Amino acid sequence: MDKVLVTGASGYIASHCIAELLKNGFAVRGSLRNAQRQDEVKNAIKTEADISQLEFCELDLLNDTGWDEAVSGCDYVMHVASPLLTKEPNDENEIIKPAYEGLLRALKSSVKHKVKRFVMTSSFSAVGYGHVKDVFNESHWTDTTKKIGAYNKSKAIAEKAMWDYLNELDPENKIEAVAINPTLVVGASLSSDIGTSNIFIQKMLDGSYPVVPQVHFGYVTVRDTAKAHVAAMTHPDANGKRFILAERCMWLAEMNGILRKNGYQKAPVRQAPNLLMKFLGLFNDEASAIAGFVGKTKFTNSENAKNILGFNFEDVEAGIVGTAKQLEELELIGK
Image 1 (cartoon, rainbow, N blue to C red):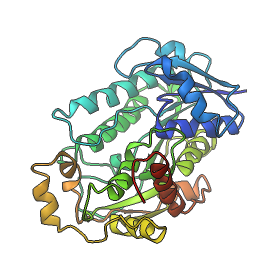
Image 2: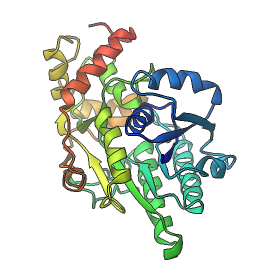
Image 3: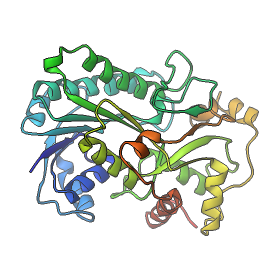
C-alpha cells in the first residue's frame, strides 16, 4: 500500500484530500503543527473515510525539525500546508516567508527520499493577478511586481520556487511534480474550520457586507479539489503540469443569487460602486484585501484538468449551499 505525506492535515482542503486518499486505498501520514490536534482531525475525517491507515507527525513550515523523518517511508508528498489570511498583514513577509520556506523544506526532503511525485497545493492566485487580461490558463503567471496582495504574492513565489528548484537539479536527482491551482474553493468543511475561502460566503450572510463588492472569481467545490489532487498525483500524463480548477466563473452578486434562490435572503443584491470599495480599502483591512480586484473579470477554462485528467466538475451551486448550511449549523449565520 502506497503512503502519502499530507502537510497541514487539519486544514480545510487537506482534510478532504486525506479522506479522498484513504477512500482510494492509500495510507496517509498527516502533518500537524500541534500533535495534540490528532483526535480532532481523526474525528473530522472518520465521517468520510476509514481512518485505520491514518497516522500523524508534527511539522512546522518555519522549522527544519522532522521533515526528513516525515517524508521517509512515503511514496508521495502532497504539500497542502500554507499560511492563510483574511486581511492584509502589516508585513507581507509574515505570509510569504512560511509559504516559501515551508515549500522548500517539503520539496528538498521529497527529493532526498526520491518520492514518486510531489503535489503542491498552489492557487489561481499564482496565475491570474497583476495583469490587465481577463482570460487565463496554466501558462500564465501572476506578476509579483504589482500590488496584488500578500496572499496572492505568497502563492506565486512559492510555486515558482518549486519549479525553479526542480529545474536546477541534475537529471538523476529530479522527481516528478505537479501544481494544483484551485480558484475559490467552496463546500462544507469536515470540521468547524470552515476554510478561508468560505469566509466570503459567511460575510455575505452575516451582515458584514450590506452591499456586494463587484468581484469576479472562479469557483470549485472542495470535494473536486481533493479529487483533482489525487488524480494529478497518480495520472501518468500529469507530471510537470499545472492544473487550474474552476467549474465556473462569476461575480459575487451571482453567487448571492444562488444563496437567495436557496432561501438565504440575507445575501445582499445591491452592488457596491467600485470607487467606494477602493476608497474603503484605504481604511478597512477587509476591503483593502479586495480593493485592487473590483470590477475586473477573471475567466479560466480548466483545460488541463479536463483534457489530461479527464475531469468532470460538479456544479458549484451544491458547494455554495452546503457551505451556507454548515454556517447555519455552526450558528455563524442566521437564515
